[in-house]
Image (cartoon, rainbow, N blue to C red):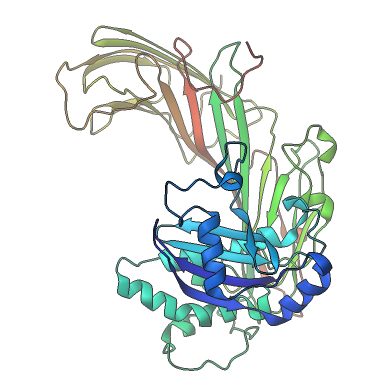
Length: 488
């Protein structure tokens, strides 16, 4: 889905700002006029757009100026999507992402009437516009620390945007993966190759597909506080083919008992997709929106590694159930940790460890412990214990750790301090990686990848499960609560 315009604005609070980069697409603008009809508003001059946006986000007009529609408490801004008042009417949806002194702005094409305002989830170009802005942000922020570096990146940007977004249609949002030849082109030299030009194949033809799932979990071991967990998946691809115009289809498979994929976001290079796949949402009131496949992604591959899609999933159980108790007596604490690996989880780890931090208590002077499995180590700053579990749980799939920790009464600059973890409020954080495994059961194989070409590329697939924010809170003390089973 194309975009109508791209801008990079520079502004600090209270300043008038300036336009660092601007790109418009007249052919897309003509399409917008046809789709939006009476609700169409043309894009004003850059300076007018700049002024309207800075006013909308509250960066001009003075900090003491109160604007009723913008600043009243009933308005809650949940996204970076704005509506700007311009001479021709309302310009929507304007995506504006602030980053330091810069604001990255994009206006995607909406192929329908804008009155009444359609839901964002129904506008396919929104996700592509966000991906395009994110790619530009990554390029601008990579390896620059001076004003000269920033100016150099800005000078290269017009050429790269032409390459990545020809005629307003995003083809590749990973700017760092564009052909290396671009880096050797003088910024004053014209580049006549078309934006959709081919790239030379390097080495044997092959396609790599990697599935990475990250699992978050917050566990309390309390009746009043509900444990939570969720999976976030990323499918990454790299296609080394004869040209970038090859059509490729990558399919994701689930076993019979696999957890459906939800909240799917796809890369702009995906040419078509089943709409039922996109509306499967984890926040739906019922499970009627669950889509069980098949998950097929036809696309024209970019030059290098790219994220084909993102997804979430509501798996029935977390991979590791935890129990943690800590009580404090003077300069000593008693700890008890129990972990159980669910029987459905592959018991092979690259690494698995539990970090037990002690905030606001000083440095550890001495500790005594008894571990049924693994080894206990003291961190360099002497404010946390690290339980190295290793690469496998025992046959019982259950392990435990008990101990007594004594702290110094003197304070030290390296002491861990936290405003939430006061008193007995504390947690254990798990870190692990399971290779060749996914919690949802999602996988891809040679039969799931199709290439419409005479060449027969080698198919390489991999998958992994990694812990992300995996916390087990002390059940003997209050803890930050994400979800309650009932309300007082």
